Length: 275
Image (cartoon, rainbow, N blue to C red; front, side):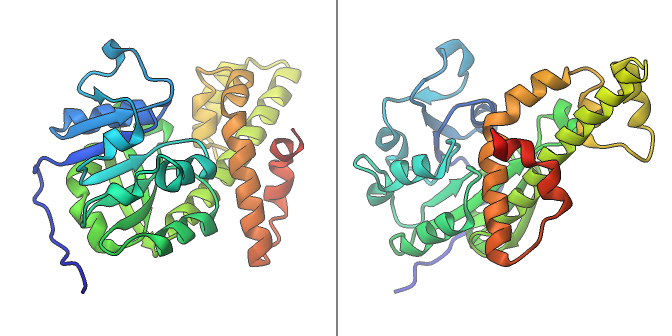
């Protein structure tokens, strides 16, 4: 029997489990709590209580997911997603009918499709990938790229709207990850190109910050270049490398499987594959 899909009204309080409280996960979970929702949160390295305002910190993913309407996963890798959902202490078997799992982790398209295909009837899996442009940093609002069931997206809009300025339903399961891989390989290439361009500028006797400020008003502008008005390129490269190595590899693998020659993108992002 098909489970009825019931929409929720905007402003309705939902029970949310948030698993993964890292650089993006913690502020996003706090935005959900600030929006009036009940958030039970877990991380293997939990934040200090004073840094987790509004969240109820718990001792395990299962404790977080008990009776949740929406389970949000913001962990690092596909292996961690699988462990949280189907591992020895996985949460999938205790979710109530009508619950949704939103996976924010960037990873392979096939892995999220396999999870979605294998969940119990009445449970929805969404690949909910988020991103944010430099110009939107002050607002705290993300862009949300979602693959999966449209009705499940609508049921959970009261939560998603607390942290998303725009929500794009881009297709069936796996589509959210697909477009995020496209975004992230572009982002990785933009970082490397912008860093090399500013190295050239400095080699020509120009000052880095003022050069970046000028270039963002020119045809060579990019969101990454805007960041380098204030940020040190070397520091940013170091910060994002762990994520870009994972994401570029996944994007290149997806391109190979699709028979797409990535050409310039492969050259611009080769540094992330080499290390």
